[in-house]
Amino acid sequence: MHTTQLLIANEWVDASDGATSETVNPANNQVIGVFADAGASDVDAAVAAARSGFESDAWRGMTPDDRGRLLWRIADLLDRDAVEIAALETLDQGQPTFMSTGVNLPLAAQVFRYYAGYATKIDGRVAPVSIPGNLSYQRRVPLGVCALITPWNFPLAIAAWKLAPALATGNSVILKPAEQTPLSTVRLVALCREAGVPAGVVNLLTGGPEVGKALVAHRGVDKVSFTGSTEVGQHIVRASADNLKRVALELGGKAPSIVCADADLDAAVAGNLQGALFNTGQACGAYTRFFVHRSRVDEFTSKIAAAADALPIGPGQDPATIIGPLVSQEHLDRVHGYVESGRSQGAELVTGGTRVGGDLADGFFYRPTVFSGVQDDMTIAREEIFGPVLSVMAYDDEDEVVARANDTDFGLAAVLWTKDLSTAHKLPPRLHFGTVFVNQLPLIDPASPWGGFGMSGWGREFGEYSIDSFTETQTTFLNLS
Ligand code: NAD
Image (cartoon, rainbow, N blue to C red; front, side, top):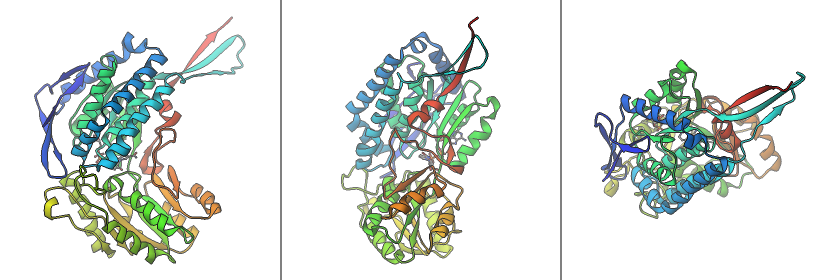
């Protein structure tokens, strides 16, 4: 049993009212952890600690070189404990081991190393002002106290995406992981402490939506960096207006996958299967709407359904597992509700559509599900399901498929499968999505920006975009005469 506390001003503490909540192993619904459930006074204490951490000489006075070394040390500690933390993530999130050890942990360490390098490269400019005898120069300065609010699907990696650039730029932070999956973030914060992050610079509040809401409304918080659902993102925009805090949003997606008539169909089936079902479909960039050229749609549907049916389902700890459990009973009910809506709205269920029984009946396991004959206006084609549900649709020509792919509120990712070089270059600019993959899985790399158009969010993470997003531009205007 894992029992965890809050981290405020470098001290591990219980919630001030002693409140706790539980987290379960989604593979068997057994309680695996009890975490401190922060209340309003803990939020106030964490914000005050983060403010003094931000203003402290230890942090403000740290040279960029030392900040870079600190981030590098955190990456080394993540590598040192990778096996243990990956196992914790699999236990808490359900994530198959090949994802937690092969993607989640390495990506977290990679992001810290990437931004360790940036700490010494955050430079400014000189503006060529036309006022005689004046010098105007710009620096990028940290924002102050940043609340980093994260979802349950890739808990560690997403916390790292935000924490590393926030620290590289000299901010202080309060991490607020999702209530379903707090354990790996608690370990990450412990590693920051071990690495020597000065007191108050990294704080941790575990708890539910109320903690997130209190941070978003708090006048002592300068920025909210949020990854989660579009609905909560909208709430954050409204609730953050009081002090006009900076808001960055990485929200939901409904990625179209366009399979052209000339595509290598076997490669498209294999890539789409992985793109749709990695992390059991619980991924914002997951491919979900399959627009397949009418000449190939039957072949595509039967091949992908057979391949989906053959994927090993089981606890994430089993090295053979490709499809793990969904994160919670609540989420399983939600996914099944979408499947029921697909059936009742007239889509044809090709495979899946049920919970897994037998030895796995206590866990939140759901069979990979493929629908064909899906219409664009069906709920399964419009709303984010965030589970292992694929909708296949036929298309006839390029203009039609572009219009249909773009006919969505979301705009995070899209993918195109073609062997034609001209199509590969001509179509992406016509697709209204933050990232367009071509003959590719939905990959993430810290050098390549990630974020959405439309209701998939505001801003971009990674590369220099995260540096910009965690800094303000400050001008100094100097009279030289
Ligand atoms: P969620 O929005 O329910 O919760 C995310 C976090 O916000 C949790 O920590 C939660 O406690 C907190 N929260 C809930 N209500 C809040 C409020 N009113 N104010 C402040 N904080 C609040 O999301 P989830 O169910 O944990 O994650 C799934 C969603 O995340 C999906 O929509 C998915 O697409 C999205 N996601 C997006 C990306 C991306 O990069 N665009 C990446 C991963 C997940």
